[in-house]
Image (cartoon, rainbow, N blue to C red; front, side, top):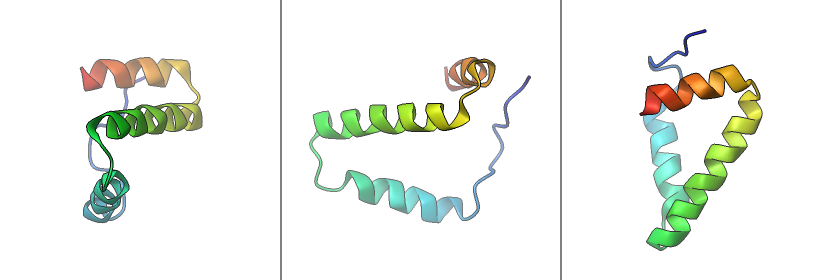
Length: 60
C-alpha cells in the first residue's frame, strides 16, 4: 500500500492556521507534547498498522 503524500485536506491553509493557533502560548516542551499527542490521536484514527508504517517511512 502506498500512502497519499499529495495535498488532500480541504482548505489546507485554514487547517495550518488552526494548527498554529493550537500551539499559541505553549512552551517548546508543551508544544512538543501537544504534537506527540496529536500524532497518537491521528494514528489511532488511521488504525491500520501498514498505513502507519508507510507514513513513518514517508515522513523520514
